[in-house]
Length: 198
Image (cartoon, rainbow, N blue to C red; front, side, top):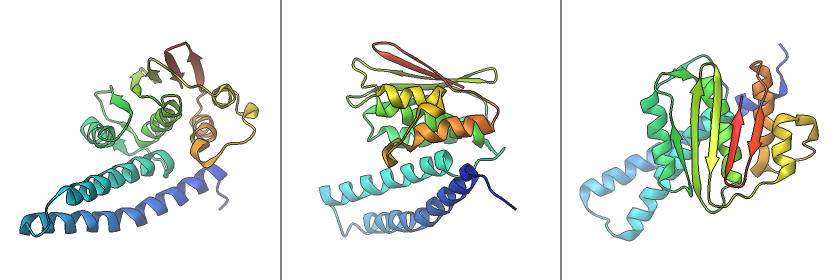
């Protein structure tokens, strides 16, 4: 059975995230045991705990954004909790607006759009993910945006996207995933706002 390039990459992403989350969970459990015994205290322990918590949240995020998608429903509480964990160390704060459960495939596109927006917010800002009917609107706002026109044009015109770095892979993946879902990505930009629709 042949696999599309996007599907194969998604399966690889799922596998990597699955294999990484177990040791991070074990480290978290070990830190909790050390905390309960009181044998290790101080800022070093807090730094390790914060770093492990951040790594776990990022892997959970990447598993949805870059892993295999499905019709599995994800609830608001789970998604808000994940974004709250990420927001603890993020310059750009993410907000999840939908109140009803949505499919993992829909969340995947929203998370990829969030990552696109984060590249334009090097000095911080906010990103709101919302759903209106069957359409998604991801809005980034900041006092100062840093927009690479070639990358952003590639979202609505994938043929214009010549080459991406690993840090920019979301710009190539979002249009491909959206197309597989029968959607088209559009982008609007202004001085202080970016809007991605799909």
